[in-house]
Image (cartoon, rainbow over all chains, first blue to last red; front, side, top):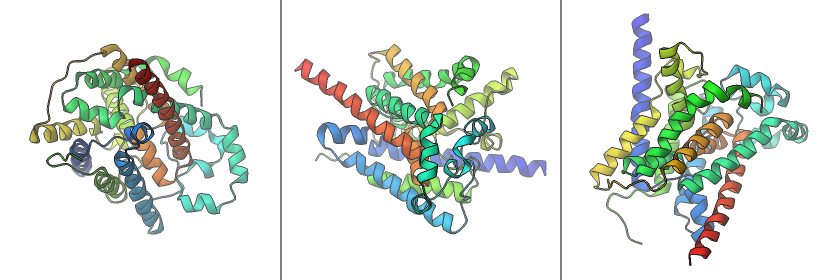
Length: 184
Length: 160
């Protein structure tokens, strides 16, 4: 039993490692970046990276729609995996918090849940957080995936980016956790 | 357009990576939370917190999935990209111009990424899964990029 559990851990980790290595390899070959697509389109009307983002989005949408239908993915489950957060944004209602297929969002009567959405603080936190992430990523020259690729290509700017990236975890949970939890 | 050797079109990347990410959750059991089979911010958070918890006995937040496996996503992406850069002779060491700025950029993106549960990649993944807050975050991200391009344009027009 114990042995089986260890094996599961090793296999799952190996799958994750090989998948991430393949994604890193392909990201290096394609210069893929989820921020630069929009940036390049606005600045120089270059659609290539934007098409990468759209094909990524479309693939995931089609496959998840299929798998929700086949019951291979569980829809309607709490998404964020943290009990503290699930309780602090409970008033939004579990319906809009759970993972649902886009079809069900549009077919459901959304007037009520939209009102609740607009009064929840998590909505504004997500909107402003996303805005700042987009702004800062563009200034840094690429999204997090792109910064990993640039570091692997030898950019020392990205090395400092990744150092800040790892260091912020300890600072966040060591000192800032209570403040940020109060934002939800 | 000038084509590099071994160039992969970004839309090909999108299809392969997107398919792998969904298949990993459906068949390899990367769950819960949902839409969690690839995220650089969240997986790095889990990795660092697992080590810190192990070393100092703290109780920093980790997800349920990260108690089943080791979230080596970020180092693996680095390794894969490094292999690609070496294999196609694109590894070039470039000196850092503004180390403090980039350190702060990284710290800000990690902090906000923990706050809204996702790096730009996972924001797109969540949108694809049909999460309302993923769409909200993606909209915000679009506005942020647009604001930053205004700044870049101003810098360009000043330097010309």
